[in-house]
Image (cartoon, rainbow, N blue to C red):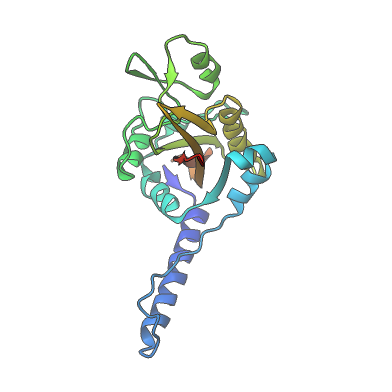
Length: 244
């Protein structure tokens, strides 16, 4: 795939600003803060647009923020996407948390983050055997007898997932945010993110933090484009200690 110039230029601009900041810092020998880490700014307008699509209850469950590390990861794997994996039907918006079997990008990205291959919101298990389900199969898993969702269960474990959403490149940023928000709403309305649970004899509250990054890609012919959105969500359990 060929990266949109606007995306790479934006990244280059951020890097240039950080380099200039670094030069100004190191040139001042009397600056006591010259060894401080340089924070690279991140454009959070896309995350803000997603949050604006969520109602109060949904925001209380999950608030999305921008993240420079996730943005860097997405740029690192962007050239590994292929036309077949991103192909969409003309005039339709296609979303996919797990790309088809021809693409190893999700697994590659998870490896870079130190996550397991199946660290996806679409992973369901039946007797320990994992299967991948598309977003429109969420209700099927819920009603599929022995199948249960593997991640974000009622347990005492911190869990992180990384997924990709692919959307027609003809969308505006607001339209793209709407599509991503719809996917997140479906997760929350299907009770995929429990707020609390009892695990053995202990009670836990769950907090969820989400990061998002997006990039726009052209196919090699330049006649079709796609947005690829990376969504990272972490569930953190906190034991509730009741006062005696």
